[in-house]
Image (cartoon, rainbow, N blue to C red; front, side, top):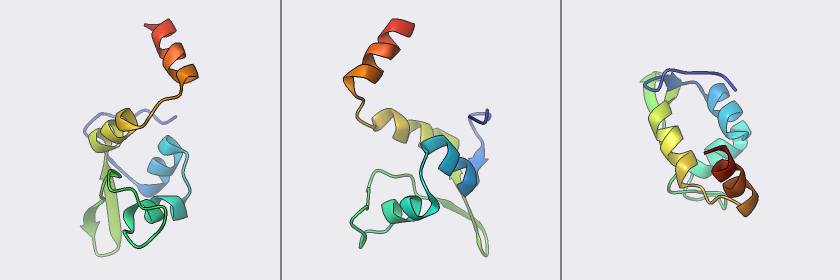
Length: 80
């Protein structure tokens, strides 16, 4: 995974890598008309005519809000 300062604005490709999602999956989560819509998914910030970025703190908060499986929770507890 790419290491970023916590105030970084991320490009779509970086969001894809961090969340392990495809471009289509990201935009499906943003589209209320799509069956993959996720109202909790961070909304991108427009930074140019055809450019958007995502806030790293918002991506972190989104990841933290995702349900965790028992195996992942157990690993996290073992590492604490």
